[in-house]
Length: 126
Image 1 (tube, one colour):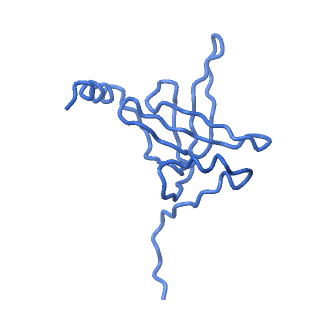
Image 2 (cartoon, rainbow, N blue to C red; image 1 turned 90 degrees about the vertical axis):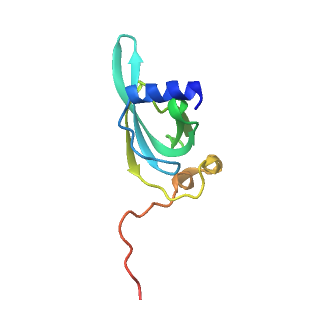
Image 3 (cartoon, helix red, strand yellow; image 1 turned 30 degrees about the horizontal axis):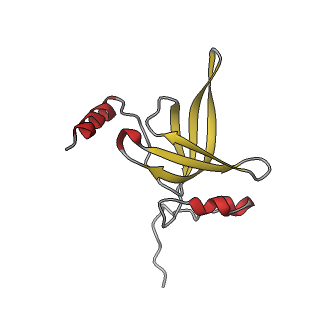
């Protein structure tokens, strides 16, 4: 094993956070700490995870949302950043790709359409 990887694993064990299992296509709520002068507040960013990159300490993910006026906003978050307070998975998406960059070309409601993954048991049809 590489020396750098050993250091990263040791650091990951030290800062162990409760990170939910999510992947591209899932709708997330990311609660971020924002500093404004002396004060600190929590801001929520909700959107579809379109990318999850790298691994270990360098892991990051990109969340895309459609804001007022139909303008798409993307934000890249380092997964193990102390600025991230909490990550919640709102719904699981069913996609066959690991990077959903094609959503950038879509406008309006189509930009947020991803099939939802059913979590229940399938009934036998006859």
